[in-house]
Each structure stands twice: as C-alpha cells, then as structure tokens.
Length: 82
Image (tube, helix red, strand yellow):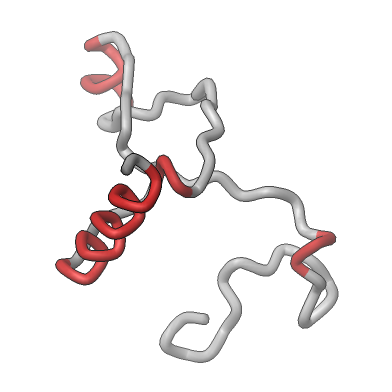
C-alpha cells in the first residue's frame, strides 16, 4: 500500500486476489547488467527496453539494504556453506 492506503501491486479487479493466482513479478537485484553504452545514454537507465531476465532463487539473491539484512545474510551463508 502507498501512504493513501491504495494497493499499488494489484492489477486485478479482485480487491484481495490470492497470491497463488497472480502473475509472477520480477525484482531487479542489481547483480549484473550488460548493456551497450547507447542504452545508458539514450534511455538513461541500465535496463533497456527489452531486458533478458535471469531468475535467481531467493537464497542467492538476498537483498542487503540494512545492517540487519547483512546479519541475516551472514547467518544464511554460514548455514549453507559450513
């Protein structure tokens, strides 16, 4: 929801759709971008108009924004690779 209480991720006519029925969403995790220089200059972004998606599992694409996220990632790493 946004500040006004409006759902921003619902593109259906159903107020509370089941998550199992929704189309998948893709999140940019900033792992890797390959683009020609012209894409950056002409479109002023690194995604381009027709990106090729590489789906990663949640464990290997954990997003670290805050110190708590780093702590969680560290615990995950130690449990996975010990």
